[in-house]
Image (cartoon, rainbow, N blue to C red):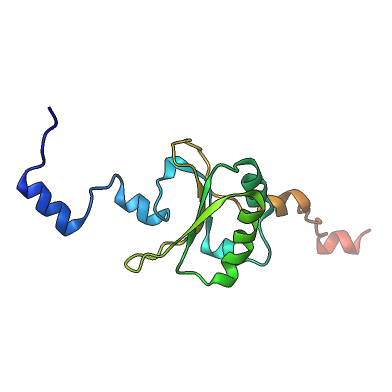
Length: 147
């Protein structure tokens, strides 16, 4: 037989809403939990000019995922990712939380757990591969003097 909620639980639910699993994590990741995320971009990464190529590649690979966008950000920054979502057939949701503003700007996630270890895209990943830094060794004063 199904257990009926008692009066206290019913009142608590009416005052505070449904009980949620990991509410802090849901606030941070725009309504979803970390174990479902394919990748997440910070607000700073979303504001960059152009789109991140790693983000576009992951969107192309994960067409069944859902994109969550931070509604507290300007639409001009989010529009480039909305166009990409349309291109790859990904549904998106604008999440606006007036009580809590997170540093996350965009999240691509599934409705089920995928447990991906690294969800953040590194800004410097492409820059390090393109330009390896080599320092030229400076000659000392005496080495220059006595060639």
